[in-house]
Length: 364
Image 1 (cartoon, rainbow, N blue to C red):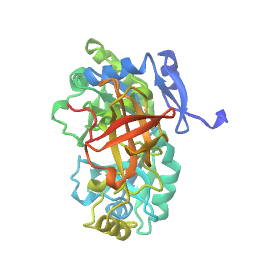
Image 2: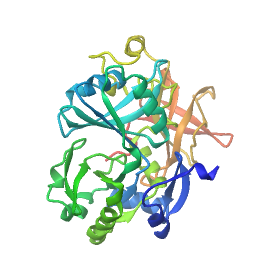
Image 3: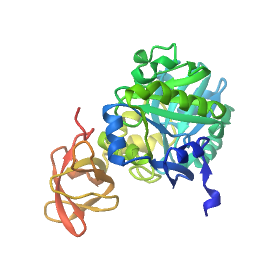
């Protein structure tokens, strides 16, 4: 049903730029403008811009804002200072994950939660359902555009657009200020590529002005628009989870290697069961792997041990544009999850040798 597909604010601009538009998470999104390989390389070595305005944003305000966030997220938001962001997840009651998200501390009683596009409605219902302490909630997803300016040349390419010193914004910190002549822009040292850079939150009415200014300022740095195809290969090289592939309603944060964002210094939804799981150990774990033979691993391909016994399955896979070999993520029985373990991936009825690798898969 195509009429259900939403359009981001700059949809027509992406079409004019030659973006190949595809349905993704309920939105029409640019998957590529030139080639995935070229766009991937642009971000790893230079600077590129993703329009990720499909992402959702919720404001949580008032005296009870922190209490609600502490209840519904696994990480400890009490550790945040104003101007800092935190990767986290919403655990569900049955041990899985409602969504992964980023929590921004905007003020002492004001937070912004950034959630995945495919889960906006689900997350909004979830947080409202658990808001029994009366925090003020506002879903601003439809009024915000988000541009991820990513790559080692990001700060040089757009520094001329703001008085804020971009090179001083630390990873997972943000500033609010003027950018491209627009006031109150959130400039965040985040992104899902592992290539460095920023995410810029602007009101929809300022989106085109800001986008055009970014490309004007960055033209001497070879800046290019980048699609979701390269976003996927970039995050996979880093071993970053994609909701719906590597984590979902039935994968526990501990199985997914997200113990580092699961803090038992506080009570949160299902924390008792997850704490028990941590103490007893998990039966399966998310691993990163690199193929030793030629082939492309894909989601749902079986993972076997050397004897050919199925021990798990691939959740995300691709050819790494940087390394030129097959890489992926997948769940395996815990006994096979150690770095260096030799495994095999069944690609088109053929078992290809692979090895469990420590994340990130791409070594700097």
